[in-house]
Picture: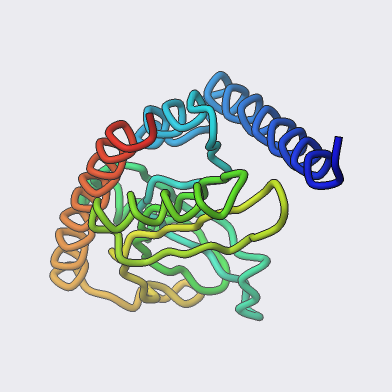
Length: 204
């Protein structure tokens, strides 16, 4: 057996091991209800394919994010988090509750990581991404046996709503932006459905 053949076996074994580890992580997250509901069908399908796996991902959400006084994002914490459309009453309950530092209103779009064992298969994922209309993404890891493609939606909103105990925004302003956020979140989830449909068609 030649040197190239040995390398292919090593690379193939490495990919199989990485794929299996991510499959188990996904199953555990789903069982413990830690996986985003909107992302589960897509991730389960990709996990069942021979040549691909999913890594850490988020379906998109509306959040109230609490930042400490030093504004260090590493120390930020979720004050409220919704993976669905939000009602005005529950948003204000979150804003008016006790907080420290700054409180930000944010809409985060989905982020999805898909792994492949070869550059050819990573490019296939990029083709699916383009076909589904996802405009932001690329290969972020490229090494023998592991290529990782990251893709993101483009729907986003972010601004501060509170500093210490002082609310910085009014009712009309937040009503307008909450409506925008709810609409954009719906569009974000529709994009995920299109992406899943393309994967099911192309990754056979």
